[in-house]
Image (cartoon, rainbow, N blue to C red; front, side, top):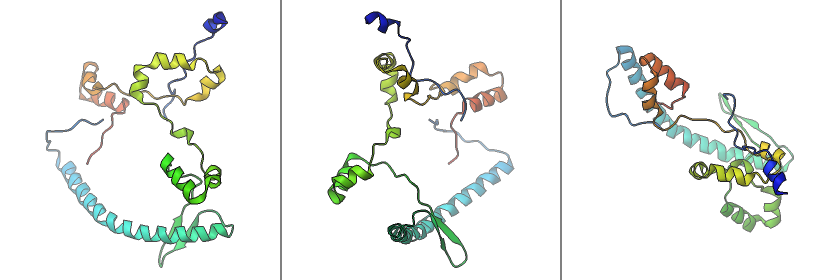
Length: 201
């Protein structure tokens, strides 16, 4: 028996995805060409306008959602399940209903069962296996032990239990990348291919 287990092929359940499907603080300041400076000013102006209108938009959106959820409940009780359009005076919105929910905690489920009964909770709520995540630091520190422990599973299960993982740049890779670049263009291309996260704020 031990010999059979020893001869069993070791399967790495954490395969790497084969195909494509923390930002450092900036403490210095650059003076760009005029067209970039103008783009910065236009970006900030649009951003300020967006923040102003975002608050106003939220008020209207909340009013529409309150009406829509009331109407959806009425429609659903009458056998009409699905998204629907609501007319404004000049435009319209679509109330989109999805067959999914936000994540529920054990406390949420307990409260639901208290309000609607255990039978309703069991009929309407299931475990979200897609939300299961490893703590990456624990997995990294114990990778070989975890893989070894998982070897007791049938190979067909082990081969399909986890979605392929991605790779990512090593912490500090942007600084290390300077060793492999001959000029700024090379370094820019290396950082682009590493998919270094970047944004403006």
